[in-house]
Image (cartoon, rainbow, N blue to C red):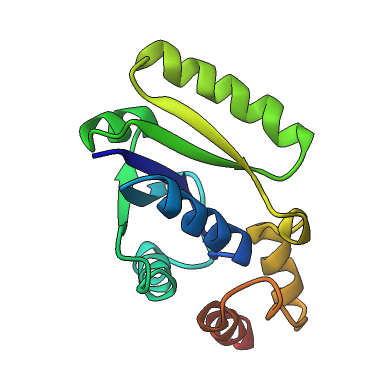
Length: 159
């Protein structure tokens, strides 16, 4: 079975993330969408909220699993018997950073490949931080996130 890991903070999950999940699910037998735990970061949504939103938006994709991990992604991928790590690229600047990480991962675990998927043109500028910024000022983010996420953002920022 070909297993891929698509990891991120997903704070919140965006339409771009969902597009990459769907495309990875078409390429691999099983896709683990993994939320990284970072003790130095203070996400808007806690892990349980992000897991719930990801499960909701991927419920119709049978070969997708939502999980969380702590530590190095490559160790998590090895433990899940993954053959690939999927990374999305929005711009050339993403590539330089992601390539450096891919090289380090390949050095530590050469049997796991990194697969780069470019974002679709219409979603290339969307990032979770941009979505949070727009939502924090009462802007409409419904074009950039699934409906459940737009509702959760409105509730978070209404407080």
